[in-house]
Amino acid sequence: LQGALPTACEIPGMTLTSYCGEAWGTFGLVMLVVLRILQGAFTGGENTALQVVLYEMVDVRDLAVGAGLSVISLTIGVGCAHLLVTALQNALGAEQMVVW
Image 1 (cartoon, rainbow, N blue to C red):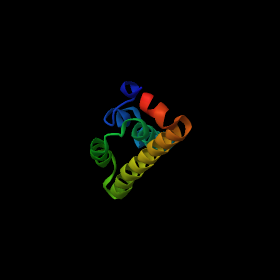
Image 2 (cartoon, rainbow, N blue to C red):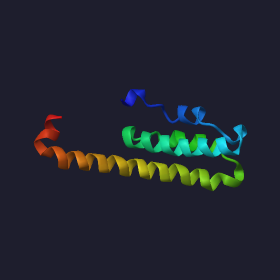
Image 3 (cartoon, helix red, strand yellow):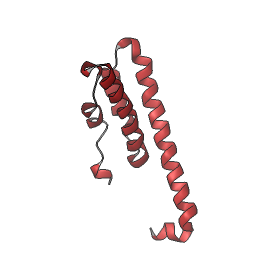
C-alpha cells in the first residue's frame, strides 16, 4: 500500500491551483491537505520536501498559511497514525500484534 501512495513531490503536481479558477484552486488546496493527511497517516510523510514545495507554490502574502498547512497536516497525519496503532493494539492484543 505504501508503494502505491504518491510522494510529497507528486501530490502538489497533481492538485489543481488557483490558475484553474478560484473554485478549482480551493478544491486543489483541500485535496492537498486531505492527501497530505493520508500520506502522513500511512507513511510518515516527507515533511521537509512538502514544506519546500508549499513555500514555492504559495504567494508571498500567504507564506504563513503555507507554513501552517504543512505543520497542521503533519500533526494530523501523525495523530491519525497513532490512533490507528492504538486501535489495532486494543483490538488485537499483545500476542496478535507480535505475530502480525
